[in-house]
Image (cartoon, rainbow, N blue to C red):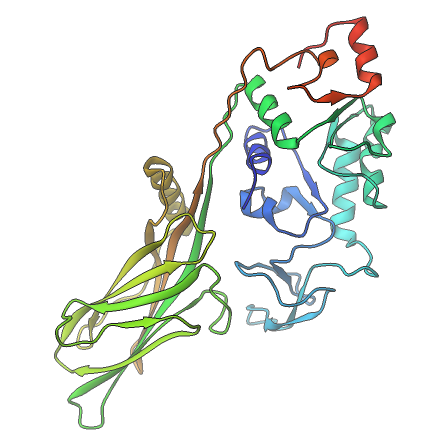
Length: 375
């Protein structure tokens, strides 16, 4: 889950203060937190990202990929004109840094008037030398790390402390709130129906699957309890292994509601939520596609207002008449995390005295004697 620092960077980016992020982590948390892809260079790859070697398309997954080392995965590019096998993006030890990411990182370091090095030892080359490129254009370097780094002497300011603590102080001094983290996941329900040979019954199957493919895992769902509006006639079922699949036979003329009680995996912000699916073989349902971004934004606003997760909405529905099937894409809020911090005036001290008791370098303390510096 994104940390306070991840979300503070999102707030700074939205305010136009932060121009670009360079990451050596492969956890994908910068993308998940909300940093735009075009403002992010992931030098060592992303364990949740697949890319097409043919057309260059990127696919950000909600599950961790099964391979590393730029190897082929089990999925293909969804572009009908391409269809090439996808590859993971995480580098192995012998792999060179990706030129596209490295070139962007170098470009923005040269352009930057201030480079923040947060929570990094600055020891792995060539990435550790990227901040130095800002110095040639008159830029400055600030390093926040618990231990000393080889680049401390090149920095205008070094703070030995926890990044979250320092960032909280920066956000308070800027009078900015750290935005909450709202995670929204997608999944699809596929309801397939067909007449029995005597045309008196309907054989139907409901499947709850990943939007990334029928064989892809659903990491945020642990189990599903299936019940019906007419529970006297239809037996309830519990689906606790993937693929989540249920087959039943009902009378042709019968109509009812299918209730899916989704039990979330550990790490989600709530225990469960319920989805309702209408069943009527003789009724034809039209497909539709809503504005996905607008729908997700409404869900985020509702989650912030309610201070809880579990909200869900339908984003898209596709229908096929023969054989009859309905594929519905659902969006669901699976996590809400807010970041409340408050640093009293007594805790915020001039640089020469440190920040919240955090140590600064001798270089900074000597500067502090010459003039009073304010954050």
